[in-house]
Image (tube, rainbow, N blue to C red; front, side, top):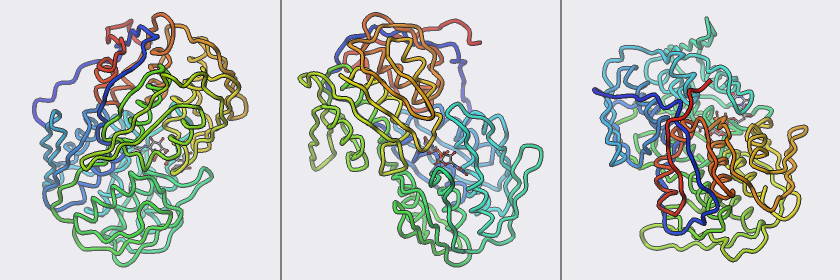
Length: 442
Ligand code: UD1
């Protein structure tokens, strides 16, 4: 990746003029959460990996930077959404703290490095804005496959002369783990014998990783369900793969249409994996239809004639439940519903940092004992607010687009981690969002 130029974007803000309904057509990009583990898994492949539908995001920049640091040759065309990866004799098996602390998904290189080299040194990720995020299940799963794991000076050192298939259970107090399942899947793909992963994460992104590994020669059955069976193969070979569309981006755009009383056609939407969101939007009173052409799926979302939005009770759960990654955006929408809504997050029970910022915009939200109680208000008003994480930032942008007056959202670098061309797409639909240099972050 010669010639990469990085800009300091930490002081950029969005200035948003609100109360503008969104109208038109918008296209969903490839899935961030599918692309990241697939890029990491490329480390375990012997031949050239060609990936399509890779979104232009700073989290993808970080993963590519990590892969190059680990000795892979990366050729990326951000405009075309393609990445080609060729592994060389590895120079390093270390994922350093500065990259892992910038992006937790860097931990996804652990399983692939073990699979290919029998050794990995990966920084422990440390704290996180959306709650306590341990990686004990990743380590437990890899240890069950025979890896010797220890923690030294903030790093996970994992070693194994030979990984051996086994029957293992991957659930913790909050249920399954998405990236933990990805790590164990990559290690099991080339382990000797048969592995059964029970209580596996069922997210479509795990199924997409399995599709990628199978296309490279792995033998994985049942991905996308809670029991995955893997018969180990000796090598993973050259592979070409297109990443699935981003269901969270699609959900965010749908909620953007709803909150602005707009009418938007979302092209390339993975509507099958959005059933829980579609049901929630139905209950809230948002009109929707799905148009299947031979080429792609379009999800039309309209709240132009919806009248007053209805309050609902929602619980964020592992797939196929309402995704925790759409919880903040739904909270913004429900802050304008006609009555009292309740949101609980069973995946990240403390993920409510956005609530206080929404209150600054006039929302009436009280968070007690892991539950948010949202009393709908007639209108939101523009304010200066601070984004705390990726999905919280998206919720604030949605609220600001619906609010009367002007809002300023600080720390929008969070948005660039997970939404490709977010303000460009929204502005094309009629939003009024400017990206400006703001005050220096504290
Ligand atoms: C992934 C997604 C993230 C999403 C989350 C939940 C990626 C890159 N990120 O994160 O956007 O919000 O799934 O859908 O795909 N846990 C443990 N021990 C572990 C691992 C997790 O107790 O070893 C707990 C977590 O604290 C959390 C729950 O399990 O409460 C789910 O976390 P997990 O699925 O692992 O999230 P990530 O894979 O990090």
